[in-house]
Image (cartoon, rainbow over all chains, first blue to last red; front, side, top):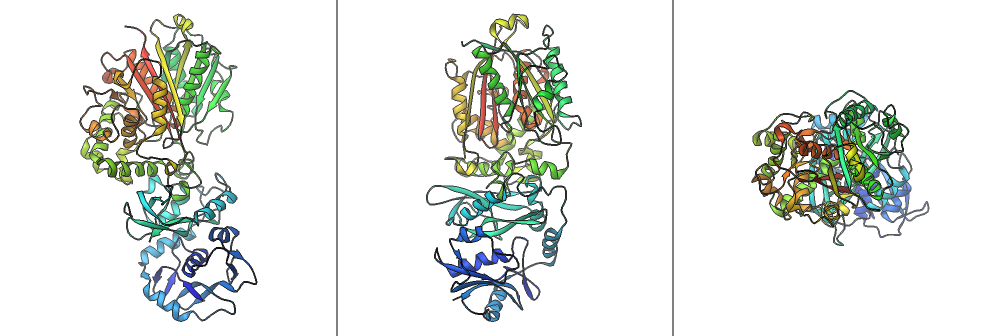
Length: 231
Length: 388
């Protein structure tokens, strides 16, 4: 078993994290590629910070140190990667990483600078404490539940300009400019909304699938959430 | 006990960017209301004050602060918070208390101060009345939520941006004659359509301006009316309803079910219908919201709001009730907690011949429609001119 995920855009000789990506969003991509059934035991290795409990809950996986499958952060010559692989030492993923690198879209330098600025900008008075209107514990529950959403069809969408963004999305707008948000309808008749992670404008009726993304940072802490991407 | 309830005075501050404290804005509205009720001692039995409490000022127990220094200081007072429908629900609370006989005189007010703050402060507070677990975490505040309603309405019914812009043009034309309005200047269809996009498909002229202001109302039980006026405005109907907080949880997001429910409740037992209305002040926080309001209240069928607006049916001389002769939230500005009470001030000024260049001839029956969020709360009231 080897399922590998790399950042989706390359800059020069490496694939690099966009504003909304990090180790955890790559871990989501790798696990989804691996198509692991619910209840699978997985051991995490190499991550800078512990993989949070909501990640396992959301994916229906069981974190277990002695698991026969590993979820591992692996630096490569073409950028950071996360792999799902069979137990044992870190596999050689260079060849697979290079394939992903070649297929990745090229980022513009000015766009990278925007992402870097947005990522590293110091806190301002707009950075309210996490939990000011939704507790971290509740946010985690909501994200975990949304990670189990199926694919759906876009029922409506909008593009949000600077004047209409919540404060905590100011950095997101600095990185991406006006962003899209979609309403997605599921086969059972329920709906939800989420950020649109597609490169092109969404279309009503288009199929959308959930994707874990980094949403925003406030007072030094990042929050993740479930966005939607084209199927 | 079930007695008639009358509006005997009303006043408001000018809406718009105001550096004063909410208390100062409240006092400004109070002075106009008191001046229009010269025989009133200034003492009310009870007060209901709608405010979201945007932060930056006294955040808790503010109802007491608002009455402080008025002759009503010491009366029981309540802060009512239902987002943008705060003072619509404050009005409903007062109506129920008056009708039951629990109180004889009541002050209803709405207050908000929003512009003296930084962009960061405003950005934080805007949207906390929407669903904070999912909508907000999806980068949405109300322009984005209403934009989704607008797009769905466009795709379902063929509503166009021109039709949305027609609402803005009409309301700004009315606002040009309203000295209380933030924007007292007419605009054109071309200018409205050319404005920058805020949340696609809603441009700048499709959105109201959140702002500062206060409005106050004096209501009394019918037997007390002669002490105040021989020209009472009867509050003949009150309806209110709620819906899911998040738009995506609703069965249909091209209509506002809470408005339909509240509207039906307000008309119940009155012998009147929307066809009898001379005018209505509806909650046009966005142009699409006015179309949704007239459809949800039953003035037109679903999907016919856009064509009705574009054809001038909701303007002076149209075959429907004139909509938002005050200029609506669009031109008047939208100090969240004050907007519902502000709508009733327009009713008072229209019926009492105080509406100047926006006066409607021979108006006798009016409706006010105040929405919180994207339709999670809605209060509707029906007003009958009590003299010939």
